View 1 (cartoon, one colour):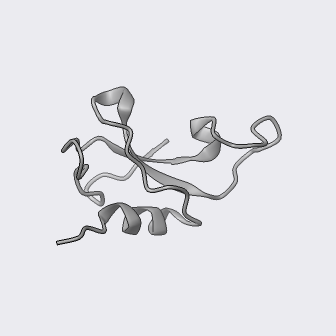
View 2 (cartoon, helix red, strand yellow):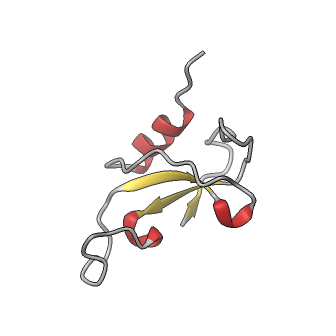
View 3 (tube, helix red, strand yellow):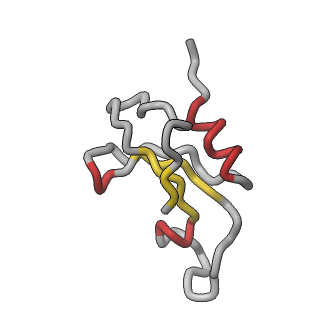
Length: 75
């Protein structure tokens, strides 16, 4: 889990500011979990373990792409 302080907007669903960047390995969501060291794919996630709702971006190829996807809003 990587916390990106100040770079991530609050969750658009629950308002939580506890947003983290995880890999599928961090989340235990990798199809090949036992063999998977680090896939290099990242997801911004509203931290359900710290008062959030669990909303996420889906997996992106870089941390920057995950942050950009999380911060994108329809206004």
